[in-house]
Length: 365
Image 1 (cartoon, rainbow, N blue to C red):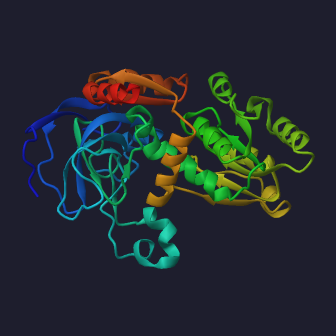
Image 2: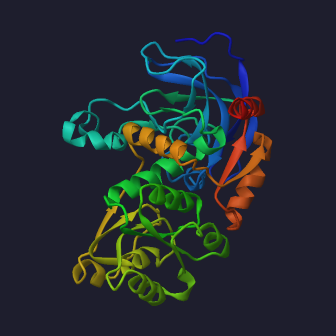
Image 3: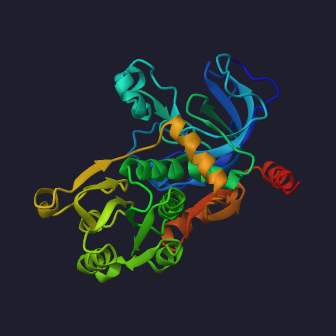
C-alpha cells in the first residue's frame, strides 16, 4: 500500500559498513506498507547492547540497515489488514517483524507463549530497518498501545530492554515475598528488573560490579558488590535468606563469572534465567549436578505479556533511567558514553521534539 502525505526523504542513522560508525544522512522514506505494517513517526529511539552486535556483523544483517530496535512514536499510516491500530495512536514498536505464521512457534497452541521465537521472521533494527530514523515501519501484530501516562522516553527502552527483563522475571514464577537475585542489577535492564520485581511483590538481591551499577541498584532490598568475589556473594545471599539461597536468579551480566555467580546465589534445585549474551556461558559442574541448578534462556515477551508490562509500568509509575541526546546527529556521543562503561540506565535519542513536548503538555493537563 502506498502512503500519501509522507515526505520523500528522512534523516536516518544507517550501518553502511560493519565495525564502522553509523552514517547519519538523508534516505528515502518508506512508501509502501504490507497488510500488517504500521508506519510510525518516530518520537524516541533507544540504544541497546544488541546494536553493537549488529554493527559488528554477527546478527546476519544485510547492509545498509537503519539501526535501533527500540522505538516509540505515533502511527501515521496502517496496512490494509490492521484493525488494532489507527492513525494518531501512540505506540511502543514491536521488534519481531512479519512472522511467518506457519511454523510451530506461530501456530501450535502449546507454543503460543513462544511466537516471538519464529525463526523465519525479521527484527527491526537487526535484519531490517529500525527506529534510528524520522519514520520507521513496525508490525501491528507485535506492537503495543501506550497508556497515557507512559512517556515516549520510557516506552522506547521498554520495547526491548523492558520486554526482555520483564519476561525473565515472569519466567522465575516466583510468588510475592520470595527472593530474586539479579546479577547485573545496575544496568539498563537490571534497574528495570528491580522495579518490575518489586512491583510484583518480590524481595530483590541486587548484585553488580560497577560503582555506577551499585548506585543504580539501591532500589533493591539488599545490594552486594560482586567485585568481592563469588564466595562473598554466596555467603551474603545465604546469610540474608536464612541459609537457603535466593529462590531464583536472573543473570544480565556478560562478565566471565556472572553466570556462576547467579548459580552460587541460588538455592538448591532453583532456577537461573540467563539473559546476557556472552560468547560462552560458563558454570561449574557442581552447580548443575550436585546442587541441581536449572538454567534456561529467555528472549522477548509476547504481545500479551507486553500489555501487562505496560499496565504495571503505568500503575506503579515506573520510569526508565535515561541518558538522552537530542537529534540523530548526537548519536555518536551516545555510543561513546555507552562504550565508556559509565552510563547509568539507557541511552535514548529524542528524534521528534514536537511529539515529546506535546505528550508532556497533555500529561500536565
